[in-house]
Each structure stands twice: as structure tokens, then as C-alpha cells.
Length: 142
Image (cartoon, rainbow, N blue to C red):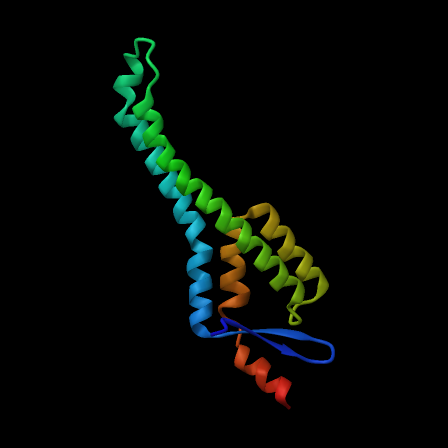
């Protein structure tokens, strides 16, 4: 089962995505933002739960605090890995997108690199989700 199909022409390569693939990509696009929020909630809640222990520390290593904070870092590492993978995918998608001109491609690549997750969400909702891939396939067949 292929989530993304490529239509080859003599001059162009089109990404053709099914609706279900676009929905899955949208979920993956928003997932790093959700994981960052979970990281901060987990980190601060574990800090608040162990605040009394940290305040009255008698020189002992606060192992329980670091155990609870380690769980927060799992959310952070997962968000970073997903974010980097999506950034690579979106930059390839922007550079191969034949519907946009060079200036717009450069603008999107800069947005994706410097704005990060918010830029990916913007690109998904402005360029990927509303595009009509069936129209591209029909134009290619003609």
C-alpha cells in the first residue's frame, strides 16, 4: 500500500496523495506541537510535585525528581525526531512542487527551517491539504 504516488512526466514529478495520507500527514504535523506541550506539562508537574523535597534537601541526591523528569524528556526526544523527519519531507515536497514558482519555494523553505513546527502546520494547511491531486493526475493523462 503506497501512501504517496509519483506521476512522472518528461519535465515534472507530481506528488499524488490520497485523502487518508493527507490526514495521517496532518496528524504527524501537529504531533510535535502536542508532544512539546506534554513535555512542559510533565516537566513542571513533576517539578511542583517534588518541590518540597528539593527545598528541604539535606544533601541527598533527589533521585525521584530526576526519574519523573526523565519521562518528560521522552516526549521531547520523540517530538524532535518527528519534527526533523517532517522538515526533511516538507523541504523535499516544496522543492518538487511544480505548482509554485522559485520565489515561493524559497519562502516556504525559509519558513520551514526558521519557524519550525508552526511553519509545517501552515504549509500543510495552505499547500498540501487543499491541493487537488486528482486534477493533476487528469492533466497528466491528457
